[in-house]
Length: 404
Ligand code: PMP
Image 1 (cartoon, rainbow, N blue to C red):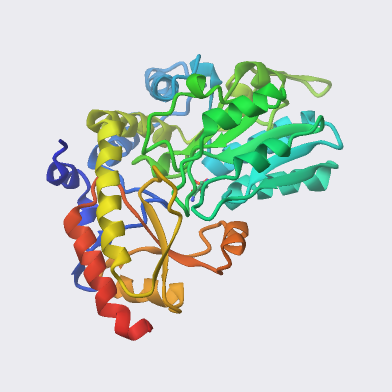
Image 2: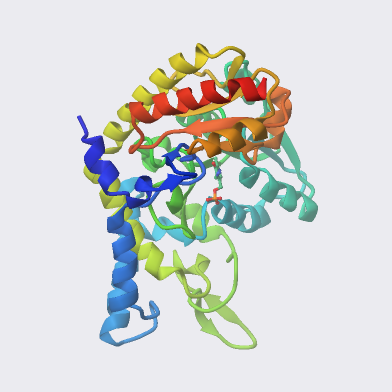
């Protein structure tokens, strides 16, 4: 059992009030809050170790470099990557996927096909469409069943000798569906096709093992795992990363530069042009330690309990429609009430201190498949409580007469 009150004390922001009401933060899918240990770590770096990495020979520069490289090793350990040099720091999941689309994309021959799913976040759709403006490629889309699970029969039928890549989310940021990525990867590999997994919604809620999954690329963001904003990770299979051309040019990513010819640095630096966000990268280490000190299995069990409780209580509300009912889904509840506009529901809940997300959740093709323009989303993290679920439900009952 985890001590939620103790955990809540680690997040001072949770003591805030909004419009005079205690904040009930249920937008954890968009970003999780940050524990004091991580904020302290950032402050510590600014006061004690602010020196550019990989450049200085002086003591403080070495400290900063070591802190960043220690995070790289810690990330590799977290996801069981074979080597720390398979870990590339980026600005977030979005940049990680863009890196693969623009660099690996250059290795994809004209006439290729890429398989996506209808539940992808725009971050795993638009980079492939941008590639389509540069190369002659076709995008094929895996549909979903009514409960929000992927139609795997159709998935298997989409492969051809032209399939070059599969890019799939581990967990849907709207439906909460946990996709069977290991099976998806096995199917793709049987066709000799590599797979990119968007792990943005998985990394803070389950144990991720890239070797066990046999993933070729795995992308995630620090700000969704109790870490600082502005940084992310791309794991890549070394044999693929080695073949891939650099993503951006600049300092750090070179071996030698002359106006005639430039040679590039070894992995992972080939993909890290310019000064990285070394302060936040160093603090990601603390965030991972924090998550590990609670245990991701314990985090998941707690969130699942909140999900079960909230779902039962929400389904008692007249006119409630929940999108995504896949078995084993994550603690994300997307919903609409009667004919109420999602924006009105969200705005009124906010006035009662409840922070939920409204809109298309950067998944417009999924909204189209569901036949809606948008919905309201409540999502849980380790620090949420049953009492908060009660207050959230109470708030919905209070606004019901106003939205119906
Ligand atoms: N993929 C998924 C599934 C997401 O939920 C998100 C964030 N909502 C992203 C990608 C993009 O993450 P970021 O904005 O941190 O790059």
